[in-house]
Amino acid sequence: MKALFGHDFIYTAGIYSTVVMAIIVFLALFELVTRYSAWEEIKKGNTAVAMATGGKIFGTANVFRYSVEANDTVLTMLAWGAYGFLLLLFVYFIFEFLTPGFKVDEELRQGNRAVGLISLTLSVALSYVIGASIPH
Image (cartoon, rainbow, N blue to C red; front, top):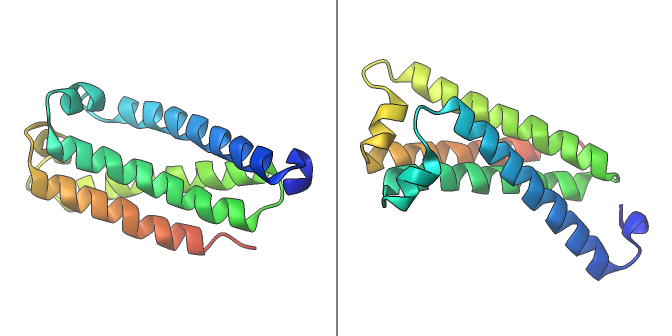
């Protein structure tokens, strides 16, 4: 990939820009599957939603970190990043499924920081598993 960008500074700026744009797109997709508006809740000071959203951002960036290291092309890097995001999204649905006693979205909307912390931890922890499984 470095040959494509030519210079280390340009390479870093190019990768950074690509990943930031991908994270923005992925967060917009995540916003579609939740029953609340993350940015409205964060604006109101909802720490639980901020933790859950921060976990998705960190998790996605972490998957990209592994993807950048493992891949030679921007397209392959993006493909693994998108796949990692889909797996993180799947984790969100598993969390909802495994907690039949309450609705994760509702608890986050109500500011339940314990649910926010578990959501953050799941995203971060599993991003390491996803990243480590990306073939070199």
